[in-house]
Image 1: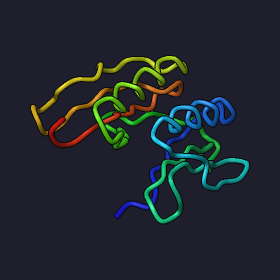
Image 2 (image 1 turned 180 degrees about the horizontal axis):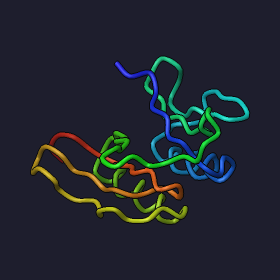
Image 3 (image 1 turned 90 degrees about the vertical axis):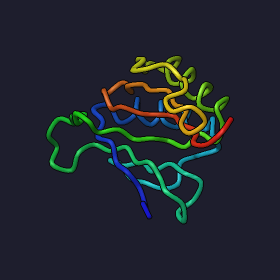
Length: 125
């Protein structure tokens, strides 16, 4: 259903470095972009995550209650993405763990621009 989700960033080069390294943990890569937007994913036929300098050139802001959940594929991949994000300069917003037993496992971070991310696995183990 979704084509892509966009997060506004203040430092485009820093954000590209952060997301390229983070998303390679789950096999995602740069798909397309230009001087103000970069889209990452598996290909253009699957959902992508975009980072951009806001079009209106106003400062980006992380919305209260706004979050991007990235399907990691397994609990181990959730843990790996969480650790990778912290190593890349993200801050913890909730360590990985069971949120709903055998239904939802997730870890939460804020990227260097304050955007909230969740790395999750849905379903048993």
